[in-house]
Amino acid sequence: MTESQLSSIPRWKALLAESLTTAGQLADHFGIAADKLAPVIKSFPMRINPYYLSLIREPGDPIWRQAVPDPLELNDAAGMADPLCEEATSPVPGLIHRYPDRVVLLATEQCAMFCRFCMRKRRVGSMTWEDRLDATVDYLTRTPAVREVVLSGGDPFMLDDGVLARLLARLRAIAHVRLLRIHSRMPCTLPQRVTDELVRVLQDAQPLYLNIHFNHPGEITTHVREACRRLADAGIPLGSQTVLLKGVNDDPAVMHRLMETLLAMRVRPYYIHQLDRVCGTAHFRVPVERGLAILQHLRGRISGMGVPHYMIDLPGGGGKVPLIPAYIVEKQPDHWVLRNFEGRTFHYPLR
Ligand SMILES: *Cc1c(COP(=O)(O)O)cnc(C)c1O
Ligand code: SF4
Image (cartoon, rainbow, N blue to C red; front, side, top):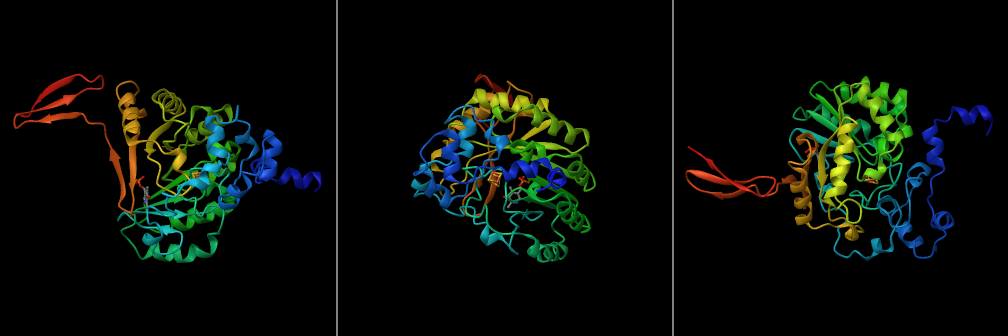
């Protein structure tokens, strides 16, 4: 390649092209044996871009666990490929219509880093969406109940700026679709993706909300702060989603630090997700009691804006429900007994 061709490639794409994708590359990088990892990567693809790789401090740390394959992925007999029955709630391929008013559009199958715990593990790394776009827009156009389209994937920011702009414009052109939302992990896993051009594309599609997936305070670097600053300065409302993961963030102090750091970046914590029972992820599972204990820890100790909802996505396609620590201790006809964040109880008169 010539110098000028090289410089015309955006930096984020150049970084992506240098990702580790094979057991051999991983073994060379960390000086570990490749033989146990190759079969895992064959079942569930690996991609660790050089930026996310640089966040790993030592084998087994919270960043490593999210990115580096583990032979335990092949030992999970209880998990299902599609526990949420997303395939059954797809009116057209790549679209999930479970709630009356909003749909999820799987905009791509690609990600800047393939998370080892991914809920869409069964399909990440395979097909393309552009052929399905006409059918998708057609379905949305004749389904006026849909008020919001959530772009997910894969990672929608893996699309080129021009492609993303065209997709957003086609969705914007559907009059009854009021809100657009993007769920992306790239401002966290490859913050170089947040270019001025991308920010302009998002500004042109307002009202558009962006939820970024963060799982650990170690993911927050000066690059990430800068990316969030640009997005927030451009008027894009930012939220975050976190997946509760064993050995990563199943600790009240870690979650506290994460939520506090996000708020300071103008990113509002939205959901903590209980991990779905997806095949190959059993070693990340955290008991629900632990999740509730984390929520209970946060409430009262951090700004209410920093306390996300703790959600379970019901198996069988029932949708998401929030789990809330028990603050109602007792219900009497004339009063309830309520527990505060410190565990003290109070009488609340009903009349
Ligand atoms: C999570 C999800 C949504 C969005 O739900 P919110 O609670 O509005 O964030 C919509 N559709 C499907 C299928 C989902 O899984
Ligand atoms: S970025 Fe999201 S879709 Fe991609 S692998 Fe991670 S969790 Fe899955």
